[in-house]
Image (cartoon, rainbow, N blue to C red; front, side, top):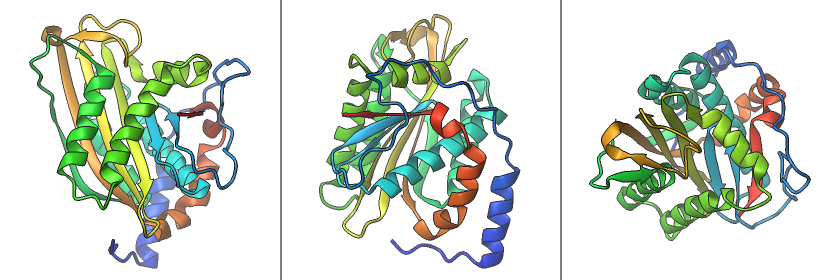
Length: 270
């Protein structure tokens, strides 16, 4: 993909803006058993698919991605999530959260191919948010002109990542997710799948789900919500990472995230 050129002065302005954003204080690490994957890095050169809970999001990686690219995805995703959640913490602020998240991601080097946010409608009387998230990703992948088998691989990775959260031994990821995605009047979470194309570019299929409900109880993802008493909004986007821009922002992101990298990211195998 041909990225729009970014001048040195533009990059300085973007870095100044990124540094000016307010972040929430890093929470204490989530208690976990020894079997949890935690936030450790996977072995260099690993090619098996894996996933991570990042704040209120589930991020999955198609096999073959480099460890540096996966770290860049997790950290940029976390930075944008924390900025948006700090400024718009309430359940009714879903659209504003999504717009600020997208703005920060763009400043970090993610180029948006398309982006939308709208009311979700369904004929089903009850819905689970994991199903809604997969529908969002599925629709995005079906409408996108993705090269080769990347589209189906992204959808499969997203579904496998959600299934992986239910596995015994993944207490830290699901606890972290529930803590960040659950709201008193509903819930808000994101679901993403990433892959590298033949040229090494990182492609992300991104979906956001925001639900306001009078009868919200339990885990955001895996319980059924009454469609009649719920308002559900979804956003989706396809993004490509400009490595030149993020390389210049990487040190700033790592410095500002600090302990959040340990406490707000939980890797797990899928």
